[in-house]
Image (cartoon, rainbow over all chains, first blue to last red; front, side, top):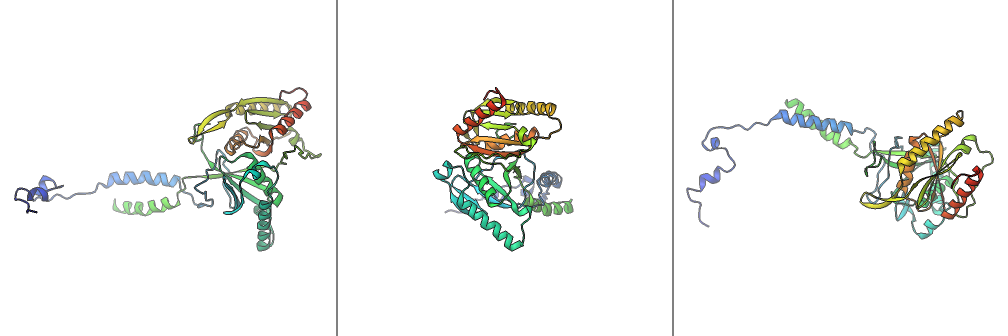
Length: 181
Length: 173
């Protein structure tokens, strides 16, 4: 490969530089802080609005979509029963697989009742007693699960001794994401 | 300007870490007695006045009804709508809102001393969960903020509605 000719050298060195710097004059580039601070101020206001001091106490799995609701009651830390299209989980552990048999009956699910009773007994042994807070359960269900599955889980919770059942939903302000009000 | 920039450079990562862009809430359900598929629902003899007055939103695969102490009313037929890119059955929530508001007015005129906040959502077994949650929202907008859920097979539901209409003496199921 041949060396660049004299005609090419000044052009290569001057790439991306102003004509003044090529001529040897100093040209200090300064950062415009005013516009950057304007941008940061907007960003800080937006983030302050989304700030949550409570932290995230509910983790939603990627394969599940919670329904939207205008409910305003904040979520509390309770036992979580998750209902997906394929399984029912208690505190993240799969307990029952969802199949045709589960969907065709209307009574409490024995495996789920046993698991919930065990959990309640464990809580009773650890804490010595169970007050109202331990008797609550949060039910997280996918938007597409049928009513019979939800009802079977709710009746299983009731039979196991969890008197208060909360449905976990995504809070929306005003209308739903599909435009309904 | 530089100290302000330093402050921003510290505060923005902190706020980014603690920001929550998805807000979770809960709906507290009232304990209800489920109806078995055989239709052998249990009935308490010592039902309170509120229990006797509480309305039922009855949801089938084709229609939405409101069953109240004043009679049963057809509210809406099912229609298909696109929700999150999927075609799903839906109902006329505005019509349900209007019917519930009307029932609330009737209730306050006829029984002003009895506060009614319980409502039962009686559905067939394959109604989608998000439709149930939307019914709960509409009920809560009209002061019925203690929803209960009952699920029945379609034929059981038909018998329930017929029995309710007969008990009310001429309501249209």
